Amino acid sequence: MARKIVITGGKGGTGKTTVCANLGIALARLNLRVLLMDMDIGLNNLDVVMKVEDKVVFDFIDVVENRCRAGQALIQDETEPTLYVMPSCHSAKRQVTADAVKKVISRLSDTFDYILLDCPAGIDVGFRRAINCADEAIVVVTPHLSGVRDADKTIAQLTANSVSVNVVVNRVRGDLVASGEMLSAFEVFSLLGHTALGVIPENDEVNCNVDLHACRKPFDVLARNLTSGSYDIYDCVSRYKGVFGRLKRKFKKNV
Image 1 (cartoon, rainbow, N blue to C red):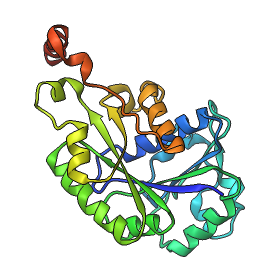
Image 2 (image 1 turned 180 degrees about the horizontal axis):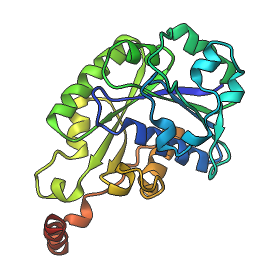
Image 3 (image 1 turned 45 degrees about the horizontal axis):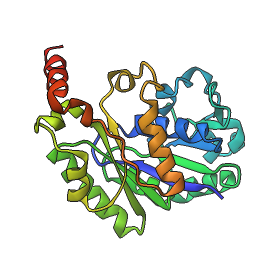
Image 4 (image 1 turned 30 degrees about the horizontal axis):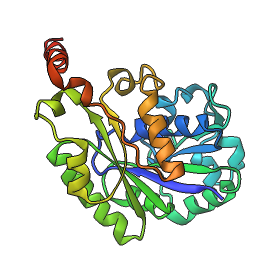
C-alpha cells in the first residue's frame, strides 16, 4: 500500500513542483516504486519539469473519464525505471471531484510504495481536492516572512483535515543566512512548529530546470528522512562561516 503524500506550500513560487520531482527521483534511487501525479488540472507543468511532455499519450482526465486504464497514462522515467509520472490535463480546466481522484489513486496504490501529489498553488478547490486524497503532506516554504505566513495558513488547513505535516525549507542561500540577511531553516522550523523534514539550498540549475540531478545530495537526505524517520538536516551554511567563508560570501555577492 502506497504512502500518499501531497506536496504543497500555499502560494506559487515556493518550488513545490521541483521538490516533488527531485524527491521522486531520490526515492527511486532507493529502489522504491514512485508515482508522481500532477494535481494542477489544466495548468500542469510536472511533465515539463520531468522532461516527458513529448511522451504524453493519455493523461489523468482520460483515466477519470474511462478513455484508458490507469496504467496506460503512466510515463516511465528514462533514468530511474521505478519512477513514473501521471500527467495532468493539457486542455482547459476540468471539473474533477476528490472522489474521482481517490478512485484513480486506489487503483494504483498497490503498485507503488509512494504516490506524490503535486498540489496546485493556493488553498482553494484544487488544494482541497489534492489534500483529501493524501494521508500526509510536505509543506514547501521559502525562508522569507511572507512565505512563512503563507505556509502557516496552509498548515492550518491541513491539520484541520487531519493530514500530518512535514516541512521542507527550500531555496536557502547559505551565504545570506551566514551574514544574517535571510532566515535560517531552523528559524523557519521554529516559527511553523512542525516536523523538520529537510533543507534544500538555492540552485540555479534546478530552479531553471537545466538539470534535475544538480542538487542530488540534499534530496537524498530528504528521501532518507522520509523513509527512515531520521532527522538529518543538510548543512548549506557552514561553508560560508569563518575567514574563508566570508571570502566566499563576498565573491558570491559580486558574481
